[in-house]
Length: 255
Image (cartoon, rainbow, N blue to C red; front, side, top):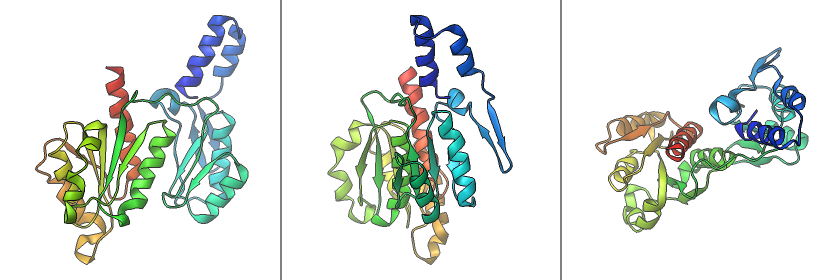
């Protein structure tokens, strides 16, 4: 159960729109629901601010749909990452209000009570080095949208044409956190880290020629960044970068 739904429920009880017993009934569900192939953590949203996210890769279509049905039944909606064509088709057929993003390989169904934006009026900026990095950037963007966080974008501004990035100073200054997605040499996060004062989350991608070793070269470059305070996620992990950005924004908002 999302924190927003618990807050709304408590407001209803306090205002007399719901009885104490009705409130207890709504909260009196098991925190974990066990299926033959999964144990669904229904209280993760209450603890962490967002429901358990379903990793589609490796799951059958039936397993994916069944897990999402149980999540949706609690009113929390769902986000599925790394889906294939068959999973997306089945989910959008079962949940007509869901949104599929083919490039990001995600499917998102909003909860019955929308999440409260974690960052107030400021946004997360996603900076993409090249067009080939867009699938990872899209995964990050879809995750942030599912968290009700505003996203702005700078696309195809890699170091091969650094003037494209340097001309976007206003966008860089306006962000509360920056996610930088880059393959090849992975140099872009260091450049961005030297231009902004906000947290920078670097995401290496597997885009590149043979010596890039499927993103390992970019990962090592980012880990050895000379820009102070750049945080690095795993290769192609746009979801992880978005969740890190969301926690940073939530902590900033709480402070």
